[in-house]
Image (cartoon, rainbow, N blue to C red; front, side, top):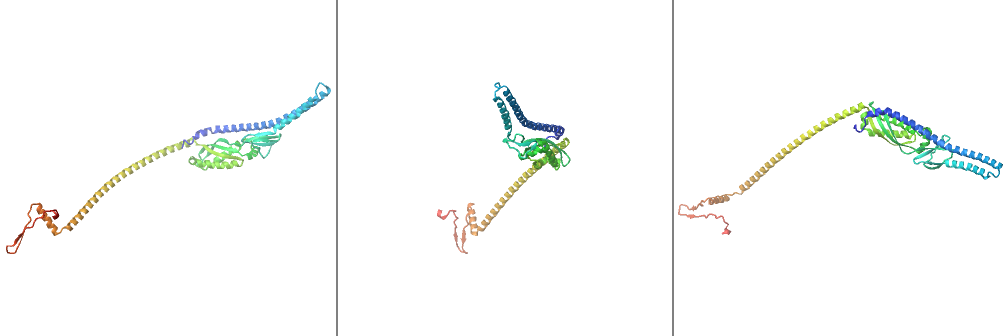
Length: 369
């Protein structure tokens, strides 16, 4: 922030010199303007006086030559007095005629005065015809730049040093009235006091710290009020900018120390935030690992449970399918596989009876025999 605003020390130390230089420049401008006006009036009157002098001299010379021609016949031509008289009439007329032609420069208007009385309507740029006894004073209506240094105060009684740059132009219709009431030096008479007053009025509404943070708002308020002020005098404000804002050396040093402390606090806050983020990262990693292990254990348990359920269902189906005949057949098959002989069954009741030999199953399907 300090880089945006130059030190107030330089502004304060240069304040007296700037004001004295400004006053000297204003006096120089006034003297230059007065001399320019006197030159314009002198040139106009000089032409008229020259024309009158030429006319009088030529008339007197023509009379003298006419008398000489009458007393010295043959030695002086009769047309000579007439020629002198003609020159004495034509030449002043040409001088007077040419003095009625006035060209107003580009970006200027002409303020007409008749024996120091200002006419209300201005002359616009280009070719104009003006009576020879009238004086035309040209005034610029182009956009001009003005830069000034001003000392003001803030709401909390801090000294504020401002460099303000304004772009303005004189309104053409207001030029005669400005010329009559102020003259050419309306910049120092109207604009400079208005800038000082408006700037002081608005800086007093802000504390010093607010001026730094709300510079754009201050600029807009100053520009709006200054435009209204100058419009009453026929001056159009095109733009006003606060090129530089400074304070006293002590206040600037206090601001710098405050900024250093704020930067340190911001650094500490950043370190705390970084440590908090690292802790959150570690906690998230640990939680992810625990969740992964828990899910793996849960998956294994679910797998064992499903395997037990399948085995139990299988055993239940097997148990339901076992009949006495199937069990007997399985036992016989086991006996045969182990080399045991199938028992023979003897039937009879107290008599000789008979013996039935039950053939062992061969394990092949009858169709395969």
